[in-house]
Image (cartoon, rainbow, N blue to C red):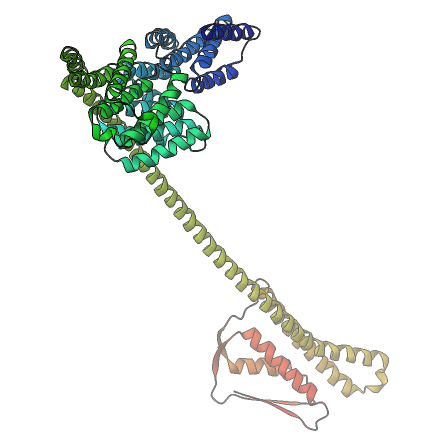
Length: 581
């Protein structure tokens, strides 16, 4: 009934799928889901992979067909149909190579690498995993990089090269998304745990096995649980080990009975039963009643499990498993006294060992790793050169920037300094202008005073002559006329001096010092006030002094002071003004 059910399921998928076309986005999403499902439910994942391929063919899309072929090949690997998987993947690779779809080529290399590892062709698997990683890194395909590193770790682990195995398993962990697929991260932890176990560090192994197993239970992934139990069982005594192995095999028989790890687990069960049959002391320690058998029963069970294990391993070309468990079966036959079968099993083991673990193969794998390291080192050197060149350019850009900023700073400094000097100059000029304006104001105030008195006398005389001529006798009239004429002449002289001085001071009203004779100044003052008869003005210059000053300023000041003194002495009897030098 079971085969009929799967045929019906496949027919249902294909029929329903033919009713509509799938978009590119949905197509890629379906591929990812099929790959995840292949570890959990191989029948369902295969049905969906076939459905996807049928859809691609209906779309007449060579690109989709190639992608669907690689997806189906991936599923067939987990179904342990490596030959069929290889044929499909080769077709996919051929198209992807022609269309230069590097991203898909990386996936093809990854699938071929898994197939090679299943067939214990570790030289080929290592080379292909490296190729897959190189291309996947160019496209930043984290999931493929992580899977390829884990596959690489398993290949080195199978070659007993635990140092390289741990190195690449840790690389896989770096590329796993901590917030992403818990399943993938758990498989990596389980791989690292197995490497620690093989290195003899069961303490670290137990921690990681426990972490991975708990995660698989949390997400209800049976395949992952069986995967962990198969290896984890070898960290314990024979009784607990057998309990875990039987629990794992129960899952394998339901999900993937011919899986590589199922083969390993069958061999482990066979070995546990052999230990109980071989060592009475171990058999006596068993507490689980379901596991208690007679010596003969233990040996029969051991042979049955070894036979089943080797049958699947030979069928699937799993030479590594054939090698290991044929050696164990040889010991069982020898213990039972069946020397012929013991010899044949041992002979098979030796033949395969020389093929798989020859120094030639080890050297090839070592060369592949060395070549990869050299390539990585060359890339690193090239990257360092580019980095240095970039830093050199950056350095000169910084220097250029600093020089530019310095130049701008210097220009701004000089501009600021010049502006400051200009402002200071303007401030001085404004101060000078303000001072000049104040001086002009005082000067014209003085001029007003000096010119007003003579003009006032002239006007007074003219009014007197016009309005009251009878008050003037001939003598007074003549005296006043002479006085007025003298005053007018002095006024004219003063006005000429003042106007000439004013003209020279229009642009720059500043003193112009030069050597002056006091006697000349006194003479000018005496002449200017010669018409004054109410005040006596005396001058003393015993030493005939000369000084340096502005002549016009000094004349104006002396005249102003003298005029003020005359005005102040109007009510004084017989006043005298004395100028001394």
